[in-house]
Each structure stands twice: as structure tokens, then as C-alpha cells.
Amino acid sequence: MASWTQVHSHNGFGTSFERPLGSTELGFYWDSVFRRTADIIRAADVEIEATSIERVLAPATLTRAWTTLKRRYPLMGARIEERSNDEVVFIVEPVTLSTINSSEELLVQEISGGQEVEEVVDRLHNGQSPLSNSLLTCIRILRRKDRPNLVHILIHSAHCIADEIAHNTILRELLQILANPALSTIETSDDAPLRERLGVSASTDGLYPFQPGSARSRWRKAISWVILSRRRAGMKGGHSLPRKVTTNTNFTPAHSRVISSTFSLEDTAKILEACRNEKLTVGSVLPAVAQVAMARVMARRYLQGKMSQKEWDFRKVEPMINAGPLNLRPFLKSAWYESGGATNASLAIGFYFYQLPFMSLGSAASLLPGSDLPGHLDMLSKSRFFYRCQRMKQSIAEYVRHPLFCEMNTVFLPARLQRLKGIALDWRSGKVAEIGAPLLSPEDEADEAFIINHGGATLGNLDSVLPHEYSHPGDSNDNGPALKLLQVRSFLHCRPAELYLGASTFRHKLKFHIFWDGHAYEDDVVKDWLKELIDSTLVYLT
Image (cartoon, rainbow, N blue to C red; front, side, top):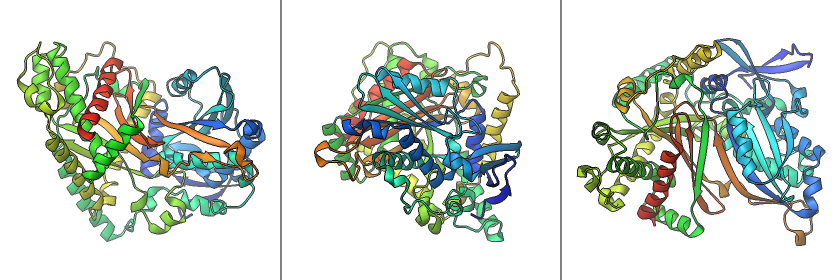
């Protein structure tokens, strides 16, 4: 636990432990200051076997399960202390890991039906959040009045302590303990002494294979900066879906919206087989599918007279720049990874940026308003589609295999941190937005900085990390498992003007989900994009 320091608690709790937030953690901390931007929710629909309902949902069972997880993963029970704008620390007080410390930390509430789940999520993200510097993660158990054996579990976390791998771990182990409460009293490989668990809950800053501070390390970082700067210099312009953006947008908290669509079992099997035949993953094809879908949305709007000739001419020749998170865990110190870091409930992500060429329009490029939109293959052939997918795969592979990959993931973090901190401090100080700020055209936006077309990532095959069933050793086989995990979903508190495309597979069905800032993007435009995403995937991959 080299990064943690043992200190005397000022709150009368005896000994406590503290460490500074790492660079990536700090960025997400300042996001959270900006009205809880980037907070994440993992939602799970869980069916409880009839004879297990009272046992599973007993307050003592829920409390024991949650506090067990906090002891295993102490950042779940940590608090943050902002001592100055440049000194922000995690504090873990051992006694608080074994208790529920506020009414907001673990809450059971009744809902009348499934539609209320989205309403609760909306209030958590767009209303008054329960999260704070004193509460970094919490859980909601939503009991259905119309279906007493079905509950919806919402795990709500600050992004500075968790990523999607962390949420997989928390959900999986929570369900294991709820199904078999004895697991909370039996010492397991996850229940190492607190000092060891703190050591695994380290910042990635201290987990890179290179030795920080050495002359060789400084040289590697300098070279990484040159390489990354040259790559970023080529990223200019860009555009996204039609949106409303002003000079105030970056300082206006987003209104987070979400929509999703799930493929059938049959279509999912065909899609995955097509990917395997081309030696691709869903992550490799997603940017190309997204670009085809967006090109069709743009072209349709132009042909319907909803986009000016000037804007259409601009968009036709602009690149599309994508960005998203990368799982850093396999690239960090092997001793940390093998001692629990691979699945620890903490934050361990990097970032990628990838530039696609301009939209492939094919026969649509020369059409005039009033014309019909051509078919998919008239705009981009299958061979060219798969070529773009292979280029995406090759580009990401070259990036992560680069001998300076880890350094390239760190050298841009200080600038990112200063930008996020500046926005948060302006927000906190009550900086008043300019009244009546004019809308920026896509050309105006591109003149200011390169424009992220959309963010995105795949959560992969969740079937491999989240069992569908959870049993109690004493249960009769006739009754079936105590718990069945029916569905999992993720929700993101968006950044201003954010558009984020995700994908995952669960119960052998592929799902696309889109998060967006409702202040910037109109719902109908995003829904059109999702429809085109589904249609384009079926055309090229089935």
C-alpha cells in the first residue's frame, strides 16, 4: 500500500488511511464537482425465487452484503477531502466500512412497474444526486408491486472510484452474497487484510511498468509527448450529429438521456459469426457502423431540405473523430494485476482517439434535395466497410502494442485535468453564462477545436463475467436458483454536448445503447441514428 498513508482520524474514528487521487481519478473528481458529471449507474433486473424473497431482501442480508463489499473494496466506503484546488485525497476509515453511514447509502423503495426504473435513474442523474464527497457509491433496491419476485438493483458510483469492470465485480459479488449470505462471514480470497486491499486500490499513476522519476522515464515521457502531439496535430475539424451548441454549452451541465435497442438471438448469432469470419470484434466494427448510420442520417436530412447546402458541403469533406475509454488493467504491473487488480473495484482506464475519413456517400454525394436516399450498399460496399473495420482494428492494435503506450496514456492527462478543473471551478463559483449566446454552426465549432463525433466503447460479452444464476447451498434443486440475473444496463451522466455509443452482449443478445446531452441533441435525431445503426448492422453483418 505504498501510495496510502496511515494517519490519525480527525473524526474520532481512530486510525484512517489516505492517498492522493491519481491523474485520471482527479479528472473524474472535477467532473463530479460539475453537477455530478460522469457518474455511472449499473442497473440489474433480478428475479428472486419465491421461497427466497424474504431472506434475500431482509435488511440484515442487504446490509451484510453491502458492507462485505466495502471491506473487500475499500474505495466503495472512502470519502474525498478537497484540501485545496491542488490537493484532493481519498480517506478510508476502517470502522465506516462495516456500517451503513447514511440513509442514502442503501435504500429500498417500492415502484409500481418497470417504467419507473428509468424515472428513478433520471432523477439520480438529472435531479438531486445522493452522491457526494462523503458518499462515493450507493445502492437502490427497487421492489416491484406488480411483480413481487422481481427487483431492480441500481449501483450508483462516482466515476473516480469505478469503471465498468469494477461494476461487473460489485454486481456479481453482491448477487453471490445475497443468494448465499454465508459468503459474507466466510473468509475468501477476496477478503485479504485491509492493508492489502488498499494496496490493490491504488491509483494507476503508480502501477505503470516504467519507473517514475528516473532519467529513462523522463526521456520516455518526452518522446511520448512528441509522438502523441504529432498524432493529435492531424486531428482537425470534424463534426457530429446536428446539434445546438453555443459558447455556453461547455459550462452548462448536461441533461442526460438514454436509448437502447437489442438484437434478437438469431441476429446476434449472425452478427458475431460475421465478425469472427472477418477476424473482427464488435468493438472493431462499431465505429464503421456508426459512421455509415450517421452518414445516412445526414444525407436524409439534406435530401429532405432540413440541412442547408453550405452545411452539407462542409460535412461531406470533414473527418469523423471518435474517442473512448480503454481497459488499462492488462498493461499495468503484473503483480498488481494478478493479486486482484484485474477485477478490483477501482478506476483503471486510459483513452483512445481515432480518426475516420470523411463520410462514404457513394451515389448520395451528387443527389439534390427531393431525391430518395440510396440503399446502404450504394453508399458503401461491403468490401469497403470491412476495409474500414480492419483499419480501425489495426490502428488500435498498433496503439496498445506501442512500446510507449502507457506513457502516451499519461502525458496528455495534465492538460485534460486543467480543463476539467477550470470548468468545475467556474461552475462552483457561480459564473453566470452569457445570456442569449448565439448558436455555433458546425463550421464555427470545427474552427475552435477538433470535434469528437461520438464517444464509445463496448462492454464485451457480459455472459463471461456475470453468471445468469446464483444459488444457495441449502436450496432445493426443485425450486431452482435463488436469483436469476435477467438483464443488465448501464447509465451515464453525460458531459455537455456528449454523444456516446456503447455495446454489450448479455444472455447471448447484442445491445446498442446511446447516451446524449438532451440540451444539445434532439431526441428524434438520436432515435434516427439508432434506427440506422440497427439497420446498417443487419445489412453489413448478417
